[in-house]
Each structure stands twice: as C-alpha cells, then as structure tokens.
Amino acid sequence: MLTTQLLTPHHSAWGQAAEQIGAITWPAGAALAKRMRTATWQPWERVVYATDGGALAGFCALLATDIVPDTPYSPFVSSVYVNPTYRGQGLSLKLVQHAENTARAAKIDGLYIVTRHVGLYEHLDYELVDRRADRFGRLNRILYKSLA
Image: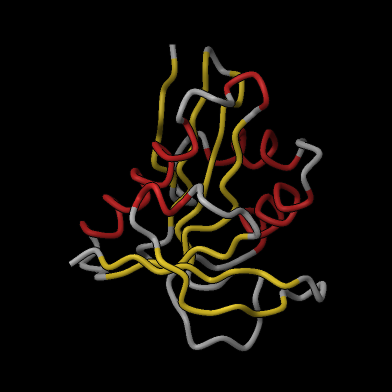
C-alpha cells in the first residue's frame, strides 16, 4: 500500500529517505539526498516521500531554489521522481499535488517547475514562463502555476 509522507529535517524518516533517494540512478536523487544531509532548510521546505511497504515509490521536494542558477523564480517543485515500478499510475502528478497543497498551507501563492518534459505538468495547469539553461548547460522549460 502506498504511503505518502511530508518530511522535514526533524522527521523520523528523514535519514532513511535521504539514503533511499540518494541510491537511485537519476543524478537529481543524489543531489537532493546531499542537500537533505548538508543544507539548512527553510521552515516551509519539504520532501514529499512515497513508499510502498518501506520501498521507495517516488518523491519530490518543495524548495526555494532549483537546478537553474541566477533566476528570479521561487519557490519550486523540484526533483519529481517515480520508481519505474510505479510509473504510469499518476504518482508523479499526485506528488506534485501534495507539494502544491503544502505550499498553499504555507501561504505560498505560486510554484515553478524546471523540466525538459512537455505535456506532463500542463495536466496540472502549469504554464511555460521561460526557458533557461541549468547548471549543466541544458536548456530547460520553466513552468509556473498560480495557487491563489
């Protein structure tokens, strides 16, 4: 059974989540895990962590910054990942919606997503606002959604 938890650095599952997130092959997992272990988190920043019987099903993060440097945009839904076993079931959109609800509760009125995917986040009413290179030089789309 899928369980979704909203994690802060003080949550009892934080260390286990960082370990599991850091173990995936996608480099963004290692980057988020490192941030979980070393960074100071703002009070509203969170990791949305989905598990199935203790196994990692997916995650995303609500963060002040993302992979695109020197941008006026903030905050972000970052590092949306779904374990291949759980793909095609709408979990990525559920993770993003969980982050959106968390942002609303923190009185955040809009969110950005940096992505190279086309069509996925548009299902949740995100709209293209910019294109910028990430810190690796890859061109990304920056999407925005008002939460007001």
